[in-house]
Amino acid sequence: MAGNDWLAGRRTEMAADRILDAAEELYIEHGPASIGMNEIAKAAGCSRATLYRYFENREALRTAYVNRETLRLFAEIQQRISDVDSPSERLIVAVATALKMVRDSPALTAWFAATREPIGGEMAGQSEVIIAVASEFLRAAGPGEEATLQRRARWLIRMITSLLMFPGRDEADERAMLEEFVAPSVLPVRPSNRLVP
Image (tube, rainbow, N blue to C red):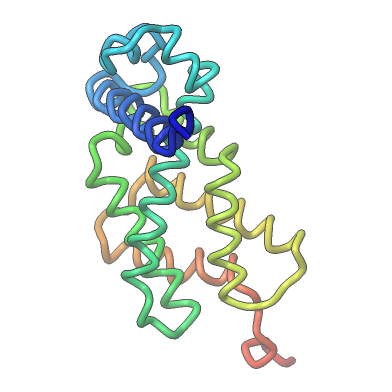
């Protein structure tokens, strides 16, 4: 049993987190588009060979970072909306909370900065984790065909990304946009809500 290293998996996770934490600091300083693997390895205090053992390339590292932050944000959003019953209000509060959390994080704001290459939108549209989180959220709002649910999830991601890059005038303005345009376009239509001619 001496050769059985029961901490091996945790060490790998800790090493990957340390690398992602170092990348996060660089994203804050320089933006995610301009940071390469050499800079990340140096900031993490590891060799390039070690870095490549955990992340095969810069895109894999970026994706891992985005996925980690998505899951962290989603867990916090779930807590904040746990006592909201209305699907529409849950969506509005969830999106408003997500926007605030991203804007309050210097590392995440860097992904959508107008003064740098805004790769956040591209990453959001390609991240399987972001799409899965949005789909799961919408699935809880009501039944629907899987293909429709996926399109609504991708549309929701596009609208959130748009608001991150082109914010409303203030919180009230953004909430009004969420109520008037976002919720009606991504939530399933309930039979009682349909207009009868």
